[in-house]
Image (tube, rainbow, N blue to C red; front, side):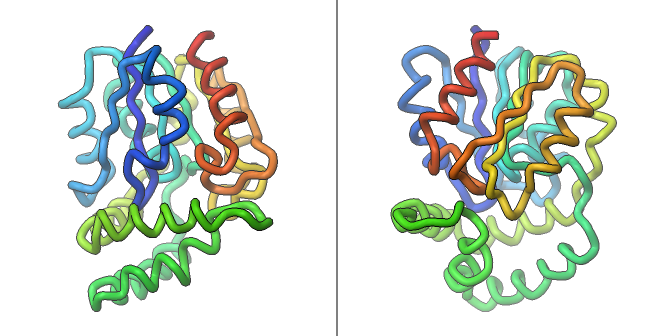
Amino acid sequence: MPPLILLPGMMCDARLYGPQIAEFSGLHALHLAPIGAQDTVEKLAADILRDAPPSFALVGLSMGGIVAMEVLRQAPDRVAKIALLDTNPLAEKADVKKRRAPQMAKVLAGGLRAVMQEEMKPNYLAPGGGKKAILDLCLDMAEGLGSDVFLRQSRALMGRRDQTETLRGAQQPALIMCGRHDLLCPVERHQLMRDLMPNATLVVVDNAGHLPTLEQPTACNAALTQWLEA
C-alpha cells in the first residue's frame, strides 16, 4: 500500500488526526505534513511534494484539503488516491476575504486566543454537548502554532485558486467526506466535488460538523478504511 500523507486544517496539527493515527499507523507508513510555513497554497503544496514519497495516498481536511487539491494539480501522477474532508474547491469569496482582514488585525494585536474562541471555534462542531474536550484541543493546537502561522495561512486561503478543473481531470479513487452539520463547508460543496470527480464516493457523517475525524472517529475511520482498501 502507498504511504499515507495527512494534511491538517487551519491552525491544527497532527492531533486533528489522533484517532486515525491510532487506527492506521500499524498498517501504513504515515506522514504528517504541517501547512504553516508559507503564505500561498502553491508554495505549501510544493513543500509537501519536495518531502513526499514518489507515490502516496493523500488526506486533507479543510485547509488541508485545499492544499491537497493543489498537490493534485501540481503532481497528479504522484497521488495514488485522495480523500478530501470538509473542504472547498472554490476560490475564496469576496465577503469571506473581507472578514479575514479584521481577524488578522486582531491577531497582530495579540488576540489570537480571542479570535479562535469567539469567531472560529463556534463554527467547528455539530450541535450538542460533550464537545468541550475537542474545542479545548483546537485552542491548544492554535496557540501552539501561534500568530505567525495564522497570518500566513489566512493569506494563503485568501489567494487560493479555483480547483474545479483539477478535480474534473482527476482519475484517482477519491473519498469526499464531510460532517452533516458542517457550517464552514456544507454538504452541497461536497456533492459538487463528488460530481466533478470521475471516481469519487461521497460520505456524509451524521452527528459531526467541521471536524469529523475527532467528532465521529469510528465512522470516519470506517470510510477511510474502505477508501484505502479499494
